[in-house]
Length: 537
Ligand code: SF4
Ligand code: SF4
Image 1 (cartoon, rainbow, N blue to C red):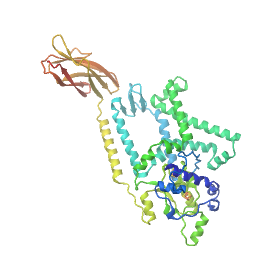
Image 2: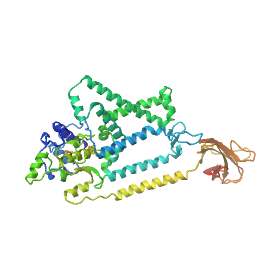
Image 3: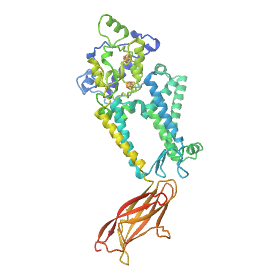
Image 4: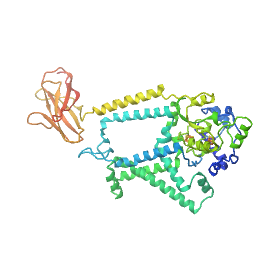
């Protein structure tokens, strides 16, 4: 499906190369310079969703298996610089997101003397994740599950409201590709200049410009990889170690891998990642509905399209003429090479740049803006019928997504607020399950793990319930007979516990509970298990 849309867009792009810069040269559109297609009526416009039948018609062949290759070779895209409302939003999002990514490792957060002072840190050796005031332990990985559910539902909600705005503005592939394209324009010029240089062949100047472009790309890619590893260690220390070649080898290896992947994905593969590697366009297409806002061409306004002169001539004769002047600016600014006038396409990341380009054209030819706009499929039909647009932001699916986000977010917040600063887990010995002592008593052994989630050393008293007349034996005791276990700050401690039962008990399992008590704070934790006795009693 994508290839069909891309084919059309790329063909249109190539055909109109001669008329490409008509607008740039003059405030008045010199439509005679544009090699326009014959005027088309609204009835001739493509359907809202390209279908196999439409694809066949485009190919001019009723035979679906026409022998054409299944693989379409990549056509290099030279996105043209554009200015406007959505371009400014994209620049702002790019600055904010890259700023967050590059600078977050250097943000400090005071957690006390025994804890790392980095606000966001993935501490793999100690198996901790720090996010400002939140500290996640390995056994609390369910928080990650909650975050993933919220992230997925947020993506679905964004899609239900405004299509692929994630892809167009926030996706890392889009953000880095945008940055790499800006660097490319810096060294190789805008679309026209770039094409002229390529057609001129290899010159000394071009070699220097290309070298500068790739060096700048590699520098950005290297800094991207470098910033990533800073999330896994104290950033200032690691930067010093990297600079003095004292950092661990694994840090250099990861920087190298991420430098290469950033350079390849954002510098060379670009829209290919969105078209062929990313699953989201396929999922998104299955999730969308007729009320989701998508970047859309107003067929009712634009068709029949034609040059300014031809349209003016038609209007003078009282014949219908659309607002689209066939300048192809919307195609030339598109980072994925889409012609949005062909209808929805999986290749469209809905970045809105074609809206900016078309609005500039409409301003120059004195026609209303938003010939291309964020609108719904439903409204495209309503426009064609002469009906007023209708927007339904609150629908069953958007309400459902919001409810799930609120529910999971609420559960996670509650769990975080009421989170205990200590925990206990118990593991019964499997072999032997019990031991009969020489005096006839039965003994069971357990491994008890105690976690102290505070940043200070704590003493916990361990006790047992559910087995009257039994004896608890742990590693460390106090003279007063209490079993006290000392656990270091932000640490866990594993101890071996022996429970000996002298009472005459029925055979089988008896439920028991281990209790942890911090006398300083009054906090408690418990864990249940079983005491096993032999069948013969
Ligand atoms: S839709 Fe707008 S930008 Fe695209 S060809 Fe028509 S007038 Fe030009
Ligand atoms: S068609 Fe328009 S919105 Fe879609 S990717 Fe191209 S420029 Fe962006």
